[in-house]
Image (cartoon, rainbow over all chains, first blue to last red; front, side):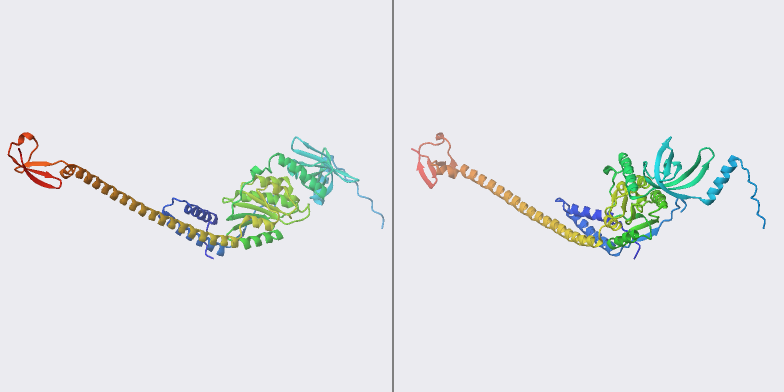
Length: 68
Length: 373
């Protein structure tokens, strides 16, 4: 899997913002079109993340104070 | 063979004897764990702890500091005391405490009750202290035993539900004497990282009250409460609630449940994303439809305005036409007046005529000639 760091929370929030923008009655049509395109892009990116991303475990070595 | 005489007894000074005995004790019993009932518990100068550990037949004195206490204690509790036996040069024999563990269901429960009351009074379990966990987190710190079923359950559910999480694991003992110190150190280690995780998960599976005891100690509970990184603690089964869980920002009933609470299910998220895509289509459709309607309204308004202006202009022309009609001489003739001309000149006064003048009189319906008499 290519190492592409996607911030799922941030992109999700952006998508929610776009949906609520598009629900405004007085949205400018050019802005609406740009938002719509960006929204579709985000959906694609998030879908790819959900399909491909894997969890990664690394061990952190700690010197315990009791010496064990 | 003739019997040998016993060797002559060595005479020691008191201090030498004490030193020799301590050396021997240290060699023979570097550390012992003694189980007994707590009696005559007292704390001096807010620092030194004294008590007796006894059973039906014997009693030994114990000495330590408050830092070794697992929480508040009271007489009658059954304790496992890890200690070094020593003979003090003035005060006699005692066990120098290195760790105390309440033991037996009754004592563990009672110790937990006392500690819970103490920490609750300090506000450690207050709802107002609870923080939200980032959802879903991108980086988590996991404190558990890597060989435990808890670890296997947690990662299995996490992997099934979600991806892309950076999991840093600190492998600790989750029961026994070392557990308390290791869990506390691990919480501290995560908090001290230059880039700490977004959430710390502390988990282990179910077990006896004794197995789970580390997670109800004052040290672990305080460390959880003091963590700057938000915490999710899942210890034991559904019914076991440790004090560390009460101090955590969020608690889960089992390790699997912890994973479920931590991240959404990606299948569900995928379905929601598809819904969102449809929603986007609908919204943009509405926006375009709205724009088309607005345009149509605009054109209609334009037509209306133009029609109005044209009507207004037409009205002006007719009014002036009517005025012209009223003012025209023809209209005057129609009302019965007549125009008198002599030699094609308009006659306005009687004085302009003399007898026998030939005049022309114009009525609305025609012209006639006449002679003035």
